[in-house]
Length: 226
Image 1: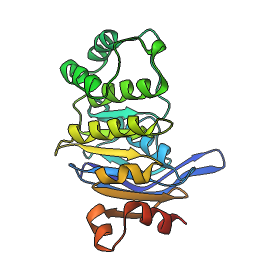
Image 2: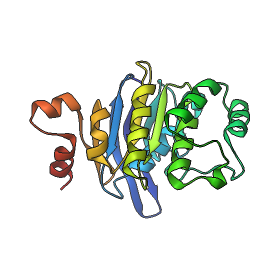
Image 3: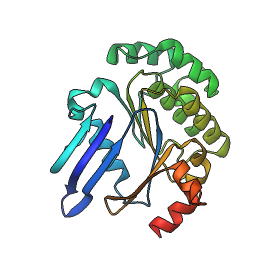
């Protein structure tokens, strides 16, 4: 399995953000990480990215702690930021230096697909910035993509472009773990849905399993997390 979390716990002071969480994910899936605010989704992504460490339990990516395979993990945080002066050309220079797996040609293709204008970040709208950051993340060729709320706070057309880019980037050797509150809009690209509540996984099911039960992912979200 590409991703394994076993009885993982992480606290912030008195707050238990992740509580004995266990989850196993194979390669080749687009996975929706779903839950209400405070369910532990962002903490889980940061644990997988190696930005946080578990207080108990084990986190494994390709059978190793995330900090040992960071070069094979791409993380897009919910509030990602870059230098305001940065444009596409500057981003290529920066990211090829930081990440040997960064693909400049794919980056430019994604910028075109996402209709990101050729200007600096300081001159872009919020939606354009979101698409720029997503293009930079997907332009890396890694095994695990962690995307925290890439659809949040952007208009419907921008969401459609982002989802189309994710579909076009799919590879059978990689896993795409996507946290989002926009369940109805995104569920069409999910191979699997993982529902979290109070720091635990309460259901992990393939989209096909849910359909066989006569449920959409959005319906399951309402029933499981109500």
